[in-house]
Amino acid sequence: MPLILVRNDITLMAVDAIVNAANETLLGGGGVDGAIHRAAGPELLAECRTLGGCPTGSAKITKGYQLPSRYVIHTVGPVWHGGDQGEREKLVSCYRSSLELARRNHCESVAFPLISAGVYGYPKEQAFQIAVDTISGFLMELEEDMTVYLVVFDRSAYHLTQGLFPEVASYIDDHYVDTHSDSPDVRRARANQAQDFYSSVPHGPAGAPPRPCFPRPAPGKHSRLPGAAPGAASTSRTAPGPLTAPSPAPDLIQALGQLDESFSQMLLRKIDEAGITDAQCYKKANIDRKLFSKIRSDIHYKPSKPTAMAFAIALELPLGEAREMLEKAGFAFSHSSKFDVIVEYFIARGNYNIFEINEALFAFDQSLLGS
Ligand code: APR
Image (cartoon, rainbow, N blue to C red; front, side):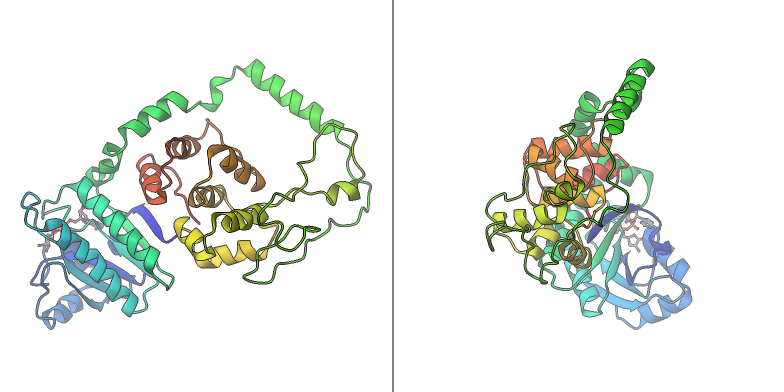
């Protein structure tokens, strides 16, 4: 997952580089600057003295010393003067110059605090939005793999994200069904019904041969459904319709030969149909390249729910197709899950910005979309 929102103390994060919200002297101060210097020890200050300061909007790098992170990238955010003195541009420049410095130093993981959102008085919601937009924009363009953590530290900073989503909160109130809303009798009847159904479906004969495995697609080639003409699968649904039950149980071998399209197959087909590249898809899904390669090369790969949902968002699937993609990974949309209700809110409004959806999920203490 390239961009992750976390609540943490940045001095505890074992990443390649943490970013310090410093001042132009680089000689330490309060807030996160003070916390980082205290945790790193006196050698950090000694190295900072050699740097000759740092102009607002720029960044400089030092070692991490006693910190768990290898480096500290010191950047100087703008002091808020009402927003008409170029504060936004300077703040964007802080994130971009820090990320560029991290890339040049081969950092694969970087943690940012909310620059300027403390002593420098930048309004927290704007500071948060600029951070998410700038970091996600940089990651979309980046060739290399990099995971960026945006660290929200104090309760007030965390509550900022809840202020962003009052309409999500009311959507949750309208749609979130507590799992215990069924009466015990209803729940018992439902359990019995499920029991009756599963006991009606016979099990395969003992010693039945293992289920057929589909040819693995050559890397870079999207898998085609068995029996489909080359190139046919990517434009038309060649998968047979889902097995229906409880018709007379088909012969097990015949049934296994009619497996519906897998998650991986549907994903690759939808990428073809959308006319986008693999990289465009997994970056939009906030998924790292390694996980995508696993999914592409294993036709039976079963992703986690946040990963499956992230691809449905990246492909901008309407709700029905998003549900279908989720089912192929073994999950269902449920109004007893706040995570599902929040994602449904955004899909229903045609908002497929995964970073904005993650801000909402983060604000309501849910898992984030992505790997
Ligand atoms: N971990 C993560 N985030 C933290 C931590 C921490 N240990 N401590 C503070 N923060 C958060 C604050 O809650 C705030 O959201 O970092 C954000 C930035 O706040 P400041 O540290 O006050 O930085 P800034 O607003 O950029 O002001 C910089 O303050 O400390 C001085 O020397 C610094 O003069 C400079 C000015």
